[in-house]
Image (cartoon, rainbow, N blue to C red):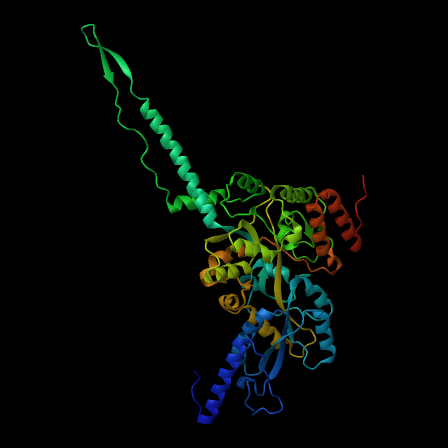
Length: 502
């Protein structure tokens, strides 16, 4: 608690206001400020009196409590500025920011947005290049993928805050029971073979007794069978790890060999209609904008590996028979919680969702996460990723202060961010308490992921690619569909033309 001042009444007022603001922040209530009557005590922050106000815009309501929490901490230590987080509509978000920047005194000084909108914002003057603190190398602070996601023409135009990507989620209890049954069956077979050998080991041998007679000797007939075998936890874990599908072919082999328990509807099922959960089939084979997603000369869509990845994806329809009309990510997570699926593809939200379900008694098995299966030994799986970042508005009269707060927000405690919002920080030093092990899988997947490209010229690519996956899933020719998409995108880019048919 802060030390008391010389006047007890003033101290009590400060403490009261601080408590009210903290409570409002934790409840998600909007914090109001009274600029005309600075001595009026409301739920405004006592630290804000006489300070310049910076407005932070965001569209995700799940961030409200956390942003208010961070703002209160910042306001309490900054003598010149206060930050007011403001939840706004996500519809025509950049247009709204642009309009407010031209006409409103309370324009957003900084805002949170996804990395794919940053180039458009930057070219409109709404996202200035960031200025890291003196002596700070952001490569030591944030992951490489997150920095790539916010870089445009060698300049970082936002600070990365949190990320989203995919990983394999599986019912470990099912696989553990399967591993135990398999190991016990293998041991029983060894025991049976050893017993059979032992039963046939008595031999009659003719030995010369020296007097011409023949003496019959019985061979040792003691039981030579293998002792009873107990399967240990370490051996079970090792067996599951060794047989967990880490490639497309091994996924098919596993699914073909695995004898699912009663109540399981599908061994492997995922949101086949959503490009975010499908992209890993072609993620390593296609390039849209190069490493930073901003290079119009680095376009490689139509190639042999990409076509092969789509054919593999199409073949899974015959293997798993997933009906696209009744499959959704939320529905699949409910099926997984109910024990109807052995494996699925999940995003980071699954960590909190499954933990909450277990705490509520709706989930009664052990689950784990793993890397997505590669396409082959030479073609790794690379999922699509999105990075939410904090941009500094180029029209703000308080850009330096906004830049400082953006860095403050993005480098805040990663565990607090996850606990309050379920979002996964892009900090290299991020830790997540009891969930660190699970989230480390997603962090590793994020590091090899493909960030959502930022080029304005290819903004329709993702919608068209999702339509392509849907048509391929339903039987259309992958080669033809990918060639048509390639030609369409090239026509949209200056200096490009589709390849002529040979």
